[in-house]
Length: 191
Image (cartoon, rainbow, N blue to C red; front, top):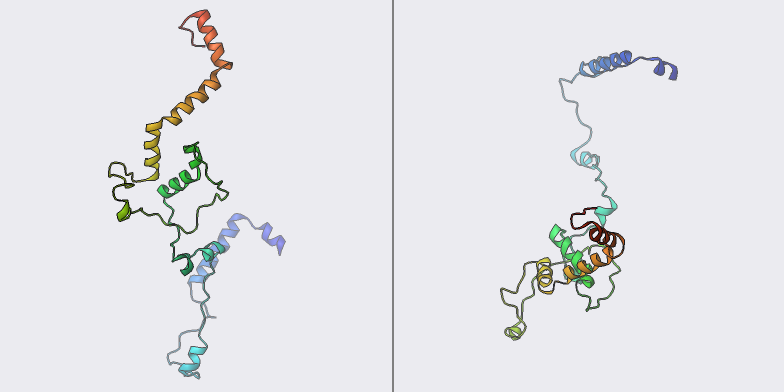
């Protein structure tokens, strides 16, 4: 059998496939013609329902099975995290908050995973906080990123840190050589 399969050419294979298609479309003598009279059923209605075909459910993957809509009643039905690009950015900022302010020390974050259940909200000040610790509308920012950028504008910490790093990188090596060549050949040296 294997010899005949390997000895067939592409044209012969195409011809066999075409014959199979034609045979599939045309009714053959082996198929039964529809009956003109209905065959009396020996099963009554109840037995027919018991013998019905059960359609199997499509199996879910482990990932889909593990996904729940909320955290349950013990956690006050905290909803599953709806991860948007803005939320992803804010979570990344929270993870790297120790870089933003070197004077503050935070507990080390060992979990790098995105929380399965979380919720984002707005803190509403109480009636006793009205004059002391409430923020004015001008001070409020829409997102955490806007708040970080506003504090950066005030402190200029990142800009000064970048300048320090560049000064260390250019001291010695190429920076020293360029200064030496400019002294030797003048300001027009582009080396």
